[in-house]
Amino acid sequence: MKPIAHIYTDFKTKFGLPRQSGLCGELRGKIVFEPEYRRVEAFRGLDGFSHIWVIWKFSETERNEWLPTVRPPRLGGNKRMGVFATRSPFRPNNIGLSCVKLEKIDYESKYSPVLYVSGIDMMNDTPVLDIKPYVPSADCKTEASDGFTSETKDYRLDVKFPENLLTLLPENKRKAACEMLALDPRPSYIKDENRIFGVEFAGFNIRFKVKDSVLTVCNVQLTMYN
Image 1 (spheres, helix red, strand yellow):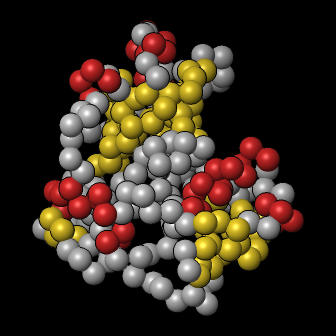
Image 2 (cartoon, rainbow, N blue to C red; image 1 turned 90 degrees about the vertical axis):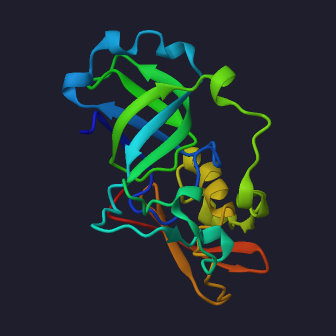
């Protein structure tokens, strides 16, 4: 398989990315297709769907070997589960699957058609292998059980983002930044309340620390990425 497109997002690195798609609806991206796939007829009918599946490549986790078990971060990093019972990027084939909202299809830009999506969980410049429409009657299983993820699905932090720091971000990125931080970007096995972490988002390095389930932003710095 070869990439048909790349998705462009506000994340230069994987640190800070939601661990699943759809957890942060304010996080947006655009899918730009390779020249040979920029054929309008290939997108005919897609604008009738509100959501799409994006099949993509974990481009930063390529390995020559695979392990049958992994440590899901939200379980504290010290409990092993079978790789096929998780969505870990460390897989026999490094393929990702995300359900995202299709905000619009741009048919006017230089690289059109371009798909604008939200609820992303991919790094900037991630290779896209395919897209498919999300079909509620087939894809939505209301009776489905959620396994061990039921233990952590409601996990959120309270975010304290001082106004003088929040306003350093572009206005259209502020809500997304707060949503992303509430999901707790830290590795779950690190509990040091004095440690300061930094997440690169939208061209800024957001520095924060966490104590008693409260995340406090300490500093915001412009990065070269911007």
